Image 1 (cartoon, helix red, strand yellow):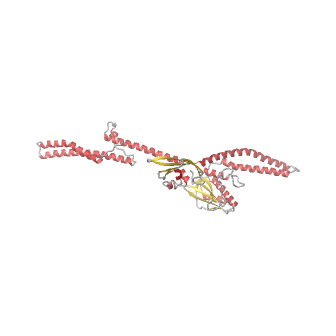
Image 2 (cartoon, helix red, strand yellow; image 1 turned 30 degrees about the vertical axis):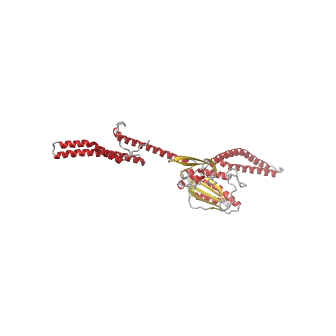
Length: 454
């Protein structure tokens, strides 16, 4: 229960002064009367009366000043606490003389309580700062997009995963309406749902959860988006790696002796003369040897999925790497549109292999459709680098299975290039997407990786 006094501090000071004057008035009047009736000279009488009056009025005034000083000190201490300055303390007799709380005066008790309040508030602020720092670290570390909205549906909080999901920095989106960020539909309806590509074809499947919390006594909304596609791809990748390892081991165990035996038999037959249908047998054995070798190389290419090492990051200039990749394709012109240096931190060998695969696919598509060239360009977006390879091919009829190992749209394709490229991109903390061009026929492949190591 809270109590409030209608008496202001100034009225309290006046009351102390008035009570001091009234309390000393009878004694002062009595002393003045006794002094006046004594057989003293006129000068002595007025001197004694003046002393009595000065002591009377001075004591009342001193009492008022002591109360005013104590109240002013308490007001200053409380004001400092209100402003967040917890370093100021009030001196009390208990602090100096070692007296207990029972022996301390009322003023000392007030100072002790204010000091204790300052200690409590200082400890609580330190705990709040530590808790906030911990929450910010957790929010930045988790790979789950978190958005908080107030009652007017203005964004008040977003973590780094939410920035990546929307492709914008926090300082540009905090304070904006949910409708501007395409998040308004998720503030109503079912609180938990699965979403298919809600922010573009590259986002994949997301799980959305909505909850509420109260801040300053008002309800707020919390949206959480978990990317299920990456977890599913990791499980899928591990499954393909296990399959590839088993197939490579078992088939190589059979291919190696088949190739060796076919080669040995071919040499034995070559030494025999006059063997019926010897040429046909030689041709058949050569075919067996050739196809065994081709199948072995085919399996070794797939084994890269299971043996891709972790990136060895180093700083290097992106532009020379792009120009070198463009020079490797000699079937049609490959143009590097962007100019200027751009230093990134990544594995140059793995990144080069990724871009070679994409440029080769773009060249194949352009040659098949009568296209004239392939273009490479890069842009810096929100601390990341986007490298786009644009071709003039027929475009993509379906993009849902392009990154599945063993799936290919080319007659002679192995289905390994795009799967390996995405694996390299994700190992660098990035993504790779394929989409049809909007200006004309053709495909646009976009590699997005952080500019520096994450």
